[in-house]
Amino acid sequence: MLQNQVGQALAKKAACNVSWDKHTLNFYSVDASSYAVRPSAVAYPKNERDIIKILKFASLHKVSVTPRGAGTGLVGSSLGNGIIVDMKHFNKIKVGRGFVQAGSGAFKGDIDKILKKHGRFLGPNPSIGPFCTIGGMVGTNASGSHSLKYGSTVDNLISVQVVTPKGNLVSLPQKRFLARKILKIANLETQKHFPRVSKNSCGYRVDKITKKSDVQKIIAGSEGTLGIITSAKLKTLPIPRQTVLIISSYKTLKEAAYDVPKILKLGPSAVEVIDYNIARHIRVSLPKGTKCLLFVEFDDSISRKRKKCTGLLSGKMVIHTTKEKQIARWWSHRNSALSHTLRNTSRNEMIFSSMEDATVPVHRLPLLLDLVEYLTSRYPIRVIVYGHAGNGNLHTRPILKKKDKHLMRKIALEFFSGVISIGGTITGEHGDGLARSEFVKMQYGNKTYGAFKKIKRLFDPDNILNPGKIVI
Ligand SMILES: Cc1cc2nc3c(=O)[nH]c(=O)nc-3n(C[C@H](O)[C@H](O)[C@H](O)COP(=O)(O)OP(=O)(O)OC[C@H]3O[C@@H](n4cnc5c(N)ncnc54)[C@H](O)[C@@H]3O)c2cc1C
Image (cartoon, rainbow, N blue to C red):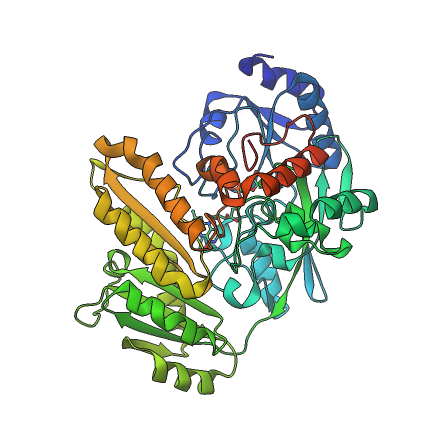
């Protein structure tokens, strides 16, 4: 079927709204990444039956289907040239004891507001804040500053409902037949090639699956390639009574990196870093020679941990506070890191995005910084650095002249092989998408990649769902 015929043909078969006008297609051609892919049509299902009809149509006509939440993903994972399924109508939220059950199109901000009334919160907190959806968080295995203490989405996912490309509505881990097959693929041999890092959004997370009650985790980070999530049940936690934020200034990123393992021994709820390219946009006076800031947060045993931490930091103290408003203001500076990064480029420069999410074992952070320094000396690039230092997860954003664009792939390849050789993953939270799927095999090797292909075939034998992402 020709691309421009899909919308009209789907509208005849689907029971829900379908759009294929120029304005809609332009809007859904992009997300928060630097990629653009024009879809054929956009569908807005209101219930599971609508999704099943879309998938049956897609299978019959060999058209791809890409589920989409808020489109805030950073690697183009919600872009596709077939049918985009916008899940905005799946927005019901139900709070239970120790969990929230939310439709995949529910916004995190709406969930946060409701949970707050119950004195609860969600562990994973992407810096994008309220603007992402549960489907997107599960789809990318999103995390954030608090994942240091509370884990990524994969660690908080209790159960999930998906519509598979064959048109079946499936609950995991309950669906026994599927659970058995997933468990068989997720064996020790497959798992041993996973890096020992605290966050990972590369490939399918078979390493998190050791028993039947874990099999829902296969959907976390699956980027819409295995099923369309209709709802997910996630753990919630009691909101801490008080937190303390300690910010320290360093003359080099490496000095800050050496402090991180010492801080981790105290059990912080967050340890984040921003370099001077970002810190300079904060309108406060910083100690002379500041080249980076380390943010350390504790949400239990506040006074004891505050005292110990301020005693062990080798940097210069900028602030330590328990005042809620002050803490929120400083966190908003940290969470604006990406927009501050974009303000650092001139008209003839560009930022490339494939090497922006590496994660290494935390004691190897200095080696990751060495790798970045080496690439900066070898190629005409400068690199902005920020991220979740406590997890060994740095967002390294290289800026290069547009005329040097052809070097991007070469630099990324060198970077990825360096990251893998120091025991890291090429993506800790943003996923593979269009930016990194071609490097998933390099990360894991043939055996584990072969297991990923089996997982994909198990759910989606005709490769209808978001093709080209994760396994290619
Ligand atoms: C400024 C900024 C800061 C960010 N900070 C962080 C951060 O700190 N940590 C972090 O982890 N991420 C971060 N992100 C990335 C992004 O916001 C998160 O990954 C977010 O969870 C994506 O949610 P979304 O609703 O926008 O998903 P989308 O971008 O719409 O989709 C993301 C993926 O999930 C899939 N998907 C969406 N809905 C479904 C569904 N119903 N069924 C199956 N698959 C589905 C899509 O197909 C796609 O593959 C940031 C992004 C921005 C722009």
